[in-house]
Image (cartoon, rainbow, N blue to C red; front, side, top):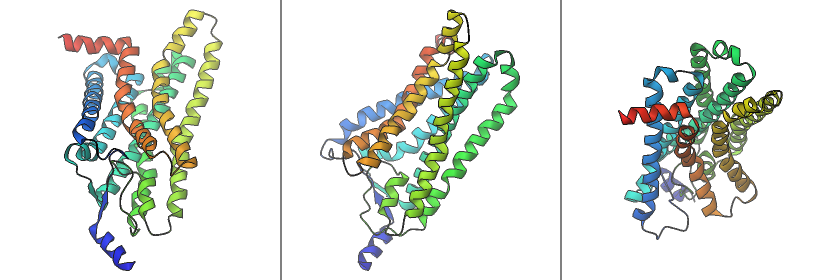
Length: 312
């Protein structure tokens, strides 16, 4: 056994998996939808970021938070492009330990940051509806910048221990990962050491970040609904609710696949490998793809600025 352990450890690589059960399908055909998703997602988020940066009329809290969301989505795309397209275009399955730990750090920290941004956007909608006259004085640009910095630091500080804990392990089991990229729950199962600390800390990070954020978003919308129902005018009530539609769509797109994935990991960890793989792809690739589309369709002001730039 020790000889096997040493051989595996000296190789210093993990082997990534494309789509379980579809290894015989030509990678070129599988790569086409992924390439299309990446192109649309990168263009969509880049256009929204560009429009918000160059147009002073969009330097408002709602659009600044939207630019944070777009930047985070671009970061997720960049973190996953090398391995996903590497597998399907070039059949490159190997990834070094250090590269794997770096990738899982960026994926998990950016997901944590995106969850924080969605919480900030819920807070923004609550202030806009509950305190419309004080909205600009509460959400000033310096305050938004500080809050954004805190969200980024929280994501980095909470996730940084994960790759550090993984790095101290020895990996003596099969080094074939379940996905096209590195995730903490997937990598830690390859270790031949006691991983209880990783399991506990991984659960802690999930509850502290996405669990807490989703709860606070839910409470924010309860308060928003309470405020809206107190408005006597039906027209004003519907107008206030309409400003939340885009954010609600973004929240559902981000959290729903993750909830289903958590349920499968908990109750069917060794079942439905194809479904698990597809849900992880959806968790990582669907929000960057749909968020720009949702906000461009629902925000008339943003849509008008985008059309005006491209018509010129």
